[in-house]
Length: 480
Image 1: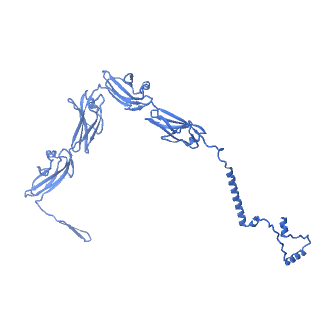
Image 2: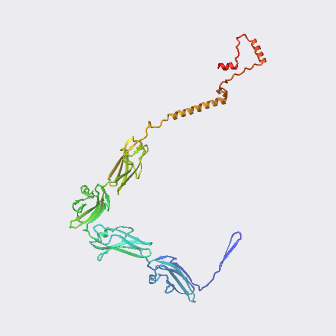
Image 3: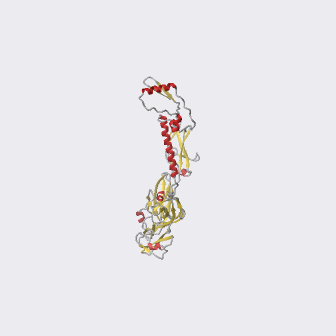
């Protein structure tokens, strides 16, 4: 079979494929189910298209041909055969033959999952009793193909409607109100998209005369200090009469009508430790009920042990380190003061605030360490230490050092000035020379005759003056 194509420019191309015509051939096309489709407890339907000129018979098998099921139209897989299969991959093979003896098949793999949703009832609990108020419920339902959830309430004489739900909540008030006082089964159902269904149920009792006490606060083992705890409880009964509580096993009872605080005097009379608070209620029919909660009373303050510094220890300008051991099961905050200064919070051993230390004068300094707990109990311990800083009068005499430095600086300045004057030629080293005069006599030299004549000539030209007698070097030295 050849396919041609050309374009407007005259170019042409073709592709071809070999085919066979066989009027006796059998063609099977599986429309449904599709590969790896998932089915539950209900067997799947199928749609197949089979063509042949001389078609004779069609059938399918689920177990590799051990059992065959003929069909003439599209229908549903045999339910008994499907039920006999284990969960997992199932191969459905469709066959057809013709009158000339040809046979052909096509197959598809599907998945059988007959597992139903898993249901776990958290509440109500078995044989739990309820009054006029409908009970709440908590159920855990798991399934990868979860579809619908619902519940019903029934016993041997009554069956409620099915009530669907999408999350945990409360039993429908109308359904609960229709029930008389009796024992019932509360059944929860769930199915999945594969048609698998499951249920779980729990026995409950409805009793409108019953007294129900729910303690909201305090909670079990909650800790309280010197102040009495408050309480929040919910009490329901069709014929409620009186409510009261006790903290000493019934030796003293305290009635109440609203949520309030435990009697302070009764609380103060209790020792530290576990305290059982028991709440009672009765009705006009004489029924009585109680619920209790254990709490802990702790009026002891934290314990403080100052490890360092030690009593009367002396410190200088640097603030001292401190180490304290503070113990309390409900420890809240730790801080210290320096001579009743502001608070300085700390969470571990450290150093006294340097600014606070600088503000103290020499002498005794009181370090006061505090700690409280979450119950309001407060404790403190203090220690007296001494601050002693060096005095100026007691310091080393630096006067000689100052004089020495001044002399060195002066010499350096004089040296610098002389060096400058010598360099600029304003002073000669010869003038600075300190030579001793010679001690031996020096023989005078006669001046040259020519020079004497010249000197005389000059003298003759000048006005007459008192001639000065020239001195010999020896005479000059003598005068000096």
